[in-house]
Image (cartoon, rainbow, N blue to C red; front, side, top):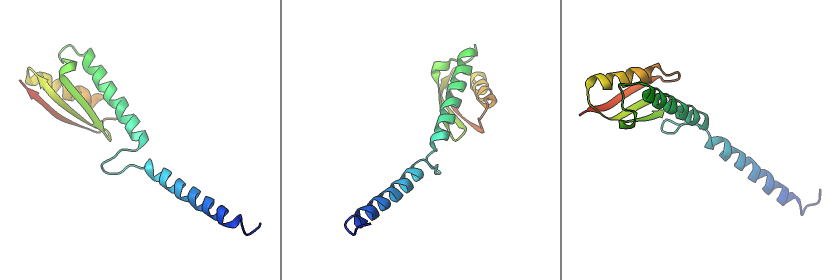
Length: 108
């Protein structure tokens, strides 16, 4: 190897090592941010909960908001009765992958 190409090779090696470290760290989960896989799982849980609400005749699905973070489902919005609120929490808890339900739905 000639001496002129050695600094270029070292710079390329350093850049690829740093790039790899930055890329692998960018997909890791933190306490306030989900990993890419967890985000996809949470999105699937949210869709399943909303679909279950649509199928239930008691719950007005469009009046209830569903957010999921690391398996914890948070429900919010407004319903007419305490029974509707309770039913929404029960339905969300039955969905596979849900670890906890925070039922913040308000009764009108």
